[in-house]
Length: 217
Image 1 (cartoon, rainbow, N blue to C red):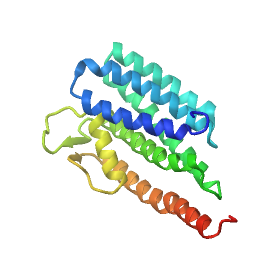
Image 2: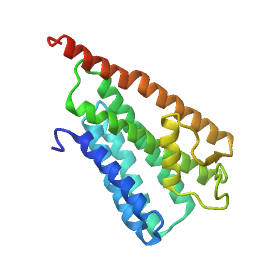
Image 3: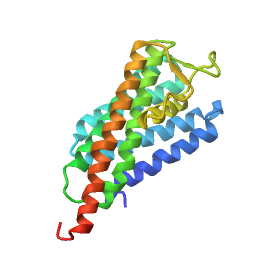
């Protein structure tokens, strides 16, 4: 199954991580479990890149240091380490999303794996920008502030929530950008979300409709 539909496994794992965040985000003792699951996701992301037009060497070159930094952050919870880890994660997830998009656009027929890839690429974009927001917050403290709890330290779940909101252009959720870099990242993600729907999803829908109307295609 993993060999045939790696995008399906990645999508399922990312949705499972959302569930873990919901149950464990407020439990400080569960940090190790969430970190371990994040490392598993890194492997699945690389697996998806291997089956796409992307370069596996580059993917491993981003994933392995990210995994090492994740382990090190368990022993030394330093903001600088988390910033570099988030930077590597952003680069890997956005690269994997781009590889999946190229994979979906390179075909004239819609396969089952490409249907799974629609969801997987969307979540990869969301995770990639969430990591980018985290980098911005670590390197430029105060880049994002909670409207409801201004003094609260923001978690990755907060950035992921903001990322999903912006990817579908639904708004800024309950986080306020406080720096120019934060505003630029938000605008870039909104632009990416509009392009994803306009180019990728509409093309795959069009190919599916054409195949049903003209079976010879």
